[in-house]
Figure 1 (tube, rainbow, N blue to C red):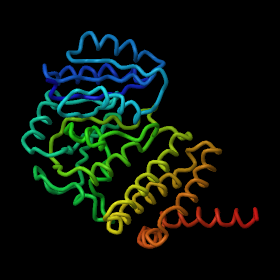
Figure 2: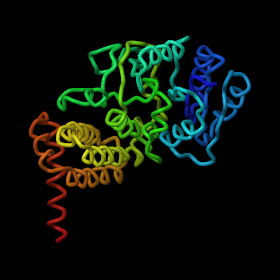
Figure 3: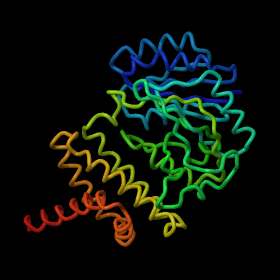
Figure 4: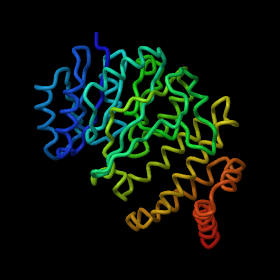
Length: 326
């Protein structure tokens, strides 16, 4: 029986894949499998993965004939996984030796649906520890209790799929899959669904994932139209949360987070191509109109002045454009 399935998507990461695979070799066990999903890479990544399939115990390579993005690649891995537990790693990140056995022991000891972990962020040579924004450690709790408060960073803001381990029953309940085709912010609807629908979770202080930030090929560094998928992602968060029995309690947090991310992108609009920048303004105005207006008004009144001003400018410009057009 496979105890742990590790799902690792790769796309044009030939510079980093050898380090990723080396760290996986330092985390092998006879009951572990490594599902390496090549999302139609066009560089040397396929050759590196073909070699890994021969040399890495438990490795299986799955190749996409078309690039589908990170969410779709992870779903391919979930569908192929046979393990009692599942976890993720990205193809340009790496692990400390022996980390996965420790992570597996943690969830088996706690007996919950999923466990969330801290991680090390790596920007060039700089290293910084990022912790799950949840104060209680090694304590099993209801995941819904970790969504709020609305005005503070909580577990749903720590949306890294690879910072944790998940029991197979979440797959069976339809909770673990990602929204097909999302090219950025794919973790956002996923983490909200996880916290709304799973029954138990815990945060632990394990450090073993090294997250490589600032990679030139990463979508977070590219100002093209794919970045705008954050709007589709958060529209899904709002829609699903609005249908929740506790919508009145949870929606302020969802709307506030959406507005904060939107204001962030609007504040960096110069990094987008001109056509994409125009589309960002237009899509943001439409998204603000779709939000529950009473909740939006309260959120904007409670935000800092700079971010609220960005959002109000977008709303006013959209109204003015419609008036001129009429």
